[in-house]
Length: 202
Image (cartoon, rainbow, N blue to C red):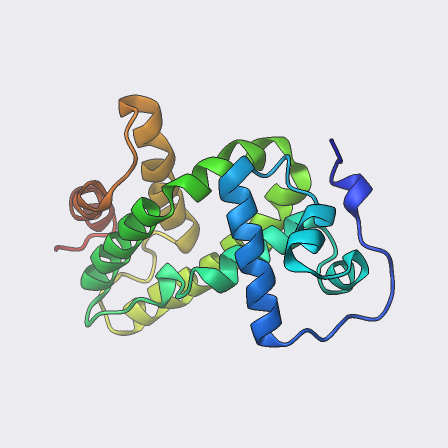
């Protein structure tokens, strides 16, 4: 089984794939992940199914991990943190509603990636840098705007603490109840845990 190291990209000029062609490749990656998981997925297989050269893939994506995380970013818009409502409390509840709906729709894909996230450092790094850190930046902006409107005190919880609370719900429910954090659970969690922790009311 190939490793992430064996699938590192050669150096060279970046390719310029069209947006439509990139989307075709992302759809191939998603289908292969659903079929047999991350560890079995190879750039060779993606190239074969997508009818693209392996060199073309590597000129666009440095590693398999980068390709997979790029697929997640492009096929699953918008970001949850892009969801906005009139107040911070309403925004957070609606974001959790959207997150629950998306988790339900993509349960199979998340199951394919979950174990791999812990076993593949490059996938974990790509996921953190390409998905989590942008979410952290967007969350920080959301909280700063709420402070400017007077909805939060200047020294209230920061964005990291908020994301830790959200991750706790996502990770904790499968461990304690053997259930996925669906929409009803996440909305209730937002109203009874997250909002009170921020000093907000639903």
